[in-house]
Image 1 (tube, rainbow, N blue to C red):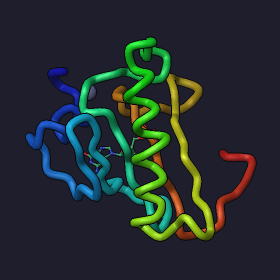
Image 2: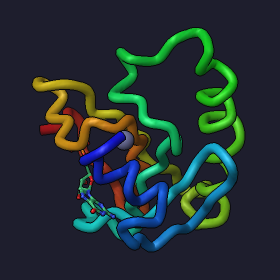
Image 3: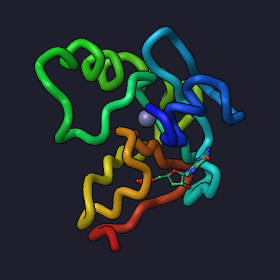
Image 4: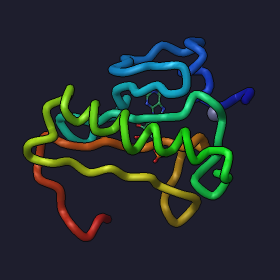
Length: 115
Ligand code: 5GP
Ligand code: ZN
């Protein structure tokens, strides 16, 4: 989608520090990391948020959650101590980039409740 930063990252128009990539998904380091490990996992196709997902995306979301995230957790060595997976959505969720992304945060102890 034109003018979408994450579409441009997926299309390599904007450089990123990728830590994982396949045909459907790319994961890259967040520009402003909030933890020692902070990567964003995104579908390459433009989806605005979880609210824009449909039944057609079940396989893609299953791939991200069942395969990519666990693999990344192991590769980034946060599987033993755990991590946080965050999907900010819409205005109250403070979603600033309107392309679905999963924040994978780890390497330190997280607080609850979130701010
Ligand atoms: P949101 O607030 O939408 O959940 O998160 C957007 C995230 O994208 C933020 O953590 C922000 O630092 C990150 N971000 C925004 N622009 C870029 C960029 O151009 N490159 C990278 N690597 N991260 C970005
Ligand atoms: Zn996009």
